[in-house]
Image (tube, rainbow, N blue to C red):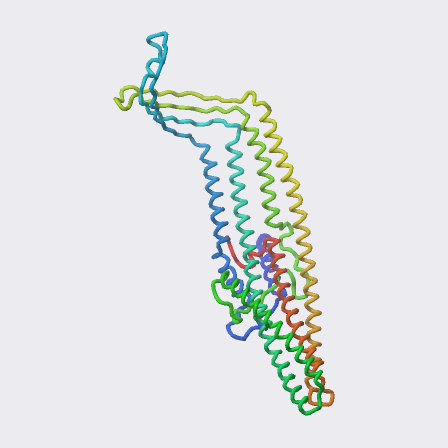
Length: 445
C-alpha cells in the first residue's frame, strides 16, 4: 500500500469516525410518529429552500458581474478601434503659402478609422487584471458566506416554528391534568372536604396556563407565516428530524478541527482586500509613468462626394506627465493610507474570528452541560408528579402541590427544548465560522 493511499484511507476514517461518534439530538421524540426525517433527509431539505431565496440569487448575480469585470480588464490588453465622422466648415482662415498642407483641410465631410495599441501603460493593465481576478475570488467567498448564513437562517426559522408547535402540544396535554384537578376540587368542595382557597389557587394556576397558551398561539401565527414565506410550504410536525452535532462527540467533548488552518469567510475576504489595496498603490503609481504604443489612422476625405482622396497615417505615441502640482504624491499617499487601514482591519478580523470561535466552543460545551442538568431536573420533577398523582386518592391528597409540579414540568419541558435547539444552532454557528457548514449540508457552489 502506497504512502498516499494510506493517507487517503486515514482521512476517510477520520471523517467517518467523526460522524459515527458525533453527538445527536433526537428532535423526532417530539413528533407524531408519522413521516419523520432522519439527519440526511433534513440536510437535503434545508438547502432546497436556501437556493430559492432572492438573497442567494442576488449574490449569484453579483458573482456574474465580477466575472464580466474581469473580462473587461483583460480586454484592455487588446487594440482599440474607433471611428468618427468629421464635418467641419471654415469660417475664416489665412494661409501664407498656396500649396500649404493645411489648405487641403477645407470644408469637408471626412470619415476616420483609428487603431491604437498600448505597449506600455505603467503596468496598470496587469495590476487591474490581477485585482479583477481577486475580486472574483471575493465573489466566490461572498457567495459561500451568504449561502452559509442562509442555511443558519433556514434552521433558525424551522426550529423557531417547531419549538412553539411542540410546546403548545405538550401544554395542551398538561392542561388536561389541571382541568381534571379542577373537576376533582369542585367535587371535594361540594362534599365539604376541601376549602375554597384550594379551588382558587388551582384556578389561578390554570388561568396562568391559559395566558401562556395564548402567548404561544400568538408566536405560532408569526413564526408560521415566516416559515411559509421562507420554505413555501406549511409547517407540520411530521417533518421532525434527528440531527447530528458536528462539533461535539458522543462523550460531549469538542471534536478537533480536521483543518487546523481553517479561517472564517470574513478573514479570507479581508486578506484578499488587503492584497488588492497593495496592488492599488502600484496602479496609482502607474498613472504617472510613461505610456507609449502604436497608432494607425485612416482618413477618407470628402466621402460625401467621392472616395478618391484618403490618408493612412501611423506611428508611435508617447505620453508622460511632467508636473501636476503635487497630485501624484497625494494620490499615492492616499492609497498607502488606505492599505494601512485595511491592514489593521485585517488584523482585527483575525482577532475577532479567534474570539468568536473560542466563545462558540465554550458556549457549546456549557449548553451541553446545562442540558444534562435540565434533563436530570426534568426526570426528578416527573417522579415527584407521579408520586403526588398516586397520593390523590389517599389521605395525603394535595392538589395545589401537584398543580405546582405540573406547571414546573411544563416550564422545564420548554427550557429543555429551547436549550436543545440553542445547542444545535450554536453548533451550526460554529461550523459556519469555521467555513464547514456548506459541506455539512452537502451544498456545492
